[in-house]
Amino acid sequence: MPKSGRVVICCNHVTMRDPILVAAVHKRQVYYMAKAELFENKFVAKIISSLGAFPVHRGQGGDVDAMASARKLLENEEVVGIFIEGTRSRTGELLKPKTGAVMLAHETQSPILPMCITARDGKVPTMFSRLAISCGELIMPEELGIEKDNAASYRKAARMVMSKISALRERDLEALEKKHKD
Image 1 (cartoon, rainbow, N blue to C red):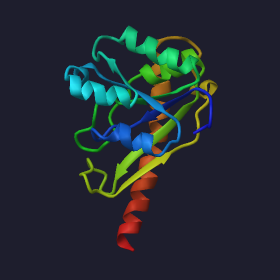
Image 2: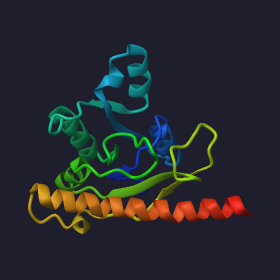
Image 3: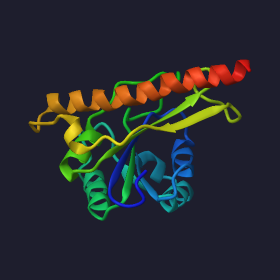
Image 4: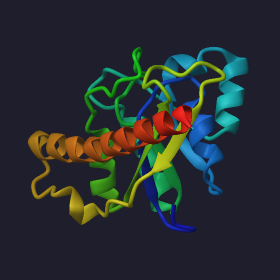
């Protein structure tokens, strides 16, 4: 993670505590898009807002307000965390990536930091599961290969980012298994 400057963190999503896990490994404040339903409970809304979350209305072809909030944060040289799958995995396996994160990175010329949260068995981690939380190399905006602002270019870039996350996952699964055997 760079010490300063705009960054989009793209991470897989396996538990409700993922935003806390991601933030715990970075010294900088990370701002997250969180599903709007979480903000319906005032107590929960207060807690997650204090952690840097802002609402996104999913399934509406891209929430204009959430994207505007994320753009503004990035223009102010902040860090925006996005769970690229758009929802939590119920199995621990990686899901198909959504395009919003790469679209945002491209539009704001922000580098992407791929991250992966992996449980030892590759499944959804329990509260006391051994985890690996890892970061890959920064992906610079020009490396996304987006030449045209169209859905196909964004899907291709999202798959590339997800391939980096998948490589982190495979590496971490091997390391966790080796550590378990030792």
